[in-house]
Structure formats: C-alpha cells, structure tokens
Length: 172
Image 1: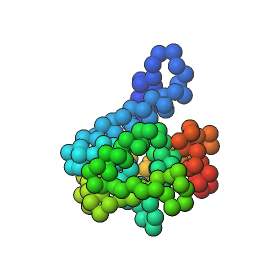
Image 2: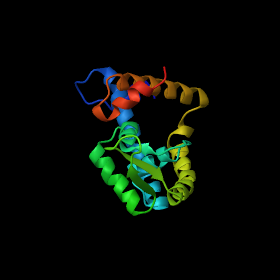
Image 3: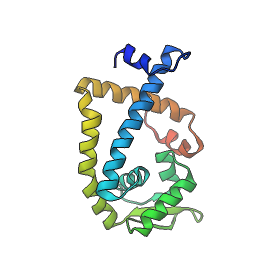
Image 4: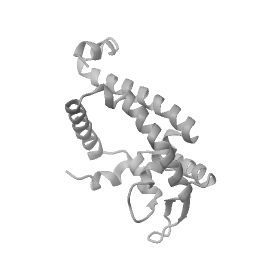
C-alpha cells in the first residue's frame, strides 16, 4: 500500500509510523470477518474453534496440552477451556488427563473433527486466497510473510503469559 493510503487511515495527531499499525488492524479485521462467515457457513465453527482444530490437525503423533494450545493461540486458558468444551460436546475433540502432568489436560482431534476440518479447509483457503493472497504477487507475499514473522518473533521475545511457552520453542 502506498504511504499515502496508509497515512489516510491514521487518526490525526499520531506519528506517520503508526500507519503500519492501523493498516495491520484493518487488514486483520477484514480477513477475519471474511473467514468467520465461511467457517460458520461450512462448519458451524467460530474462528477460535477452527484454529483449535487446525492446530490439532497438524501432523503430530500425540495430543496437545491445554497449555500448549493456549500458547499457540495466545488465548486465555479460561476462554480456551470454554471453546474446547464446546468442541468436545460436538464430538470434534476429546479431553483426557495428561499422562505427563497430573494437573494437565490433553486434547486430541477425533475422526469427526478431522472430517469436519477436511470439509472446511478448502473453502477457508478459497476465502483467504481471494481476500489476501491474490492481492500480492509472489515477491510481495514472501516479503510480507518475512516481515510479519520478524514482528512475531519480536513480540514473542516478551510474550503475554499465554504465549510464554512458544517463545522458547521458536527457531531463529
């Protein structure tokens, strides 16, 4: 986006470098709004519920702890407990006591959850492509991905409480 477009989003009195913040907020809100409608329509899922299923659907041999999920999502543990509970009631995930930590709870994707994820992902990718990916050429996408990764790494260096576990696990 040309600097003049980013500057036009800037509330009066703020320094020009805050244009990146307001541009990021606007794009994030617009993309989330678009995918939320698709997730409701295709899977009756909230955005957070989709993120939970997608993380659990990644190729890994074991379930994830609630703490690990909260760290990945940068989501409160109480909010996550509620969302995982809703997914469990729908038969999309299971919760069980942790085999490694007597206080911990592990979450696993069920076959029904995997099937729903498989059904929802194609439409999700289509929406994301149309809203975000197709707006940029290959070079711009690589550059934006790198820049956002750099910002994410910076933020995780002093993470909120729910994201502390991820900071140490992030590769350089």
